[in-house]
Length: 241
Ligand code: HEM
Image (cartoon, rainbow, N blue to C red):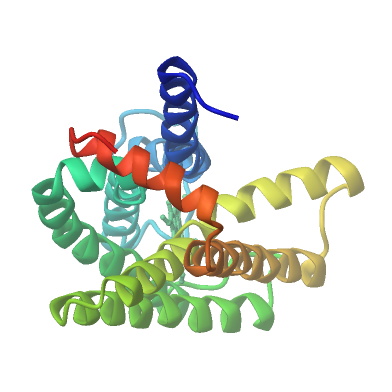
């Protein structure tokens, strides 16, 4: 069946909207811990006591402050790096913001690791939380470093995959809040094992979604999909398909 220019344009705009779906979802999800972090910063700076003080952070607050500030930059600017159309249209933004985000991502993970090792463990948590924070925090550092090194060698596919993994681990903080909130509503306050298992599971869920997205992107596409993607690419570049 032949397509009219109008139907081609609307197919294009559907594709464009789909291209923004993931970044907007990432942004919204990331706002959960960012809001909690804003309350924590207000409490630590004495502006407000809406969030009760945490005696575990009070003697040495710098790591948690660095953690929250870098995590906020990562959660606000990070999603744009995954918007393919924006990336193609503003490659310089992607490169400059990308360098800042590499620094922020490393700071998030390294400060998270520092807090895991040197702050007293939170009440009601055990060895599983400690181990999973060490494992996933380290995996985030490794993913970001690999993602950065491979793009210097022009390996775009590897760069996308490793940055997606690193970001998925970072966003684990948001999935954990969501999962623990839902579990609390459904089954009441979790015990130590349930709490720690759900925390670890949230990281596994995020990594599974990232792997699925990476594989979906690299899967061989049908001719029809290739044609419509070429059309969208051409419209981004201001060309005729
Ligand atoms: C973008 C990602 C992240 C965001 C937005 C985020 C956000 C936060 C916030 C807001 C706090 C303060 C909690 C409070 O005031 O009680 C916190 C604490 C903490 N975060 Fe993250 N975080 C992120 C990633 C990570 C990662 C990857 C790790 C891995 C090790 C981590 C480990 C920790 C630790 C150990 C604490 C201390 C909290 C405690 O033990 O009670 N975070 N994070």
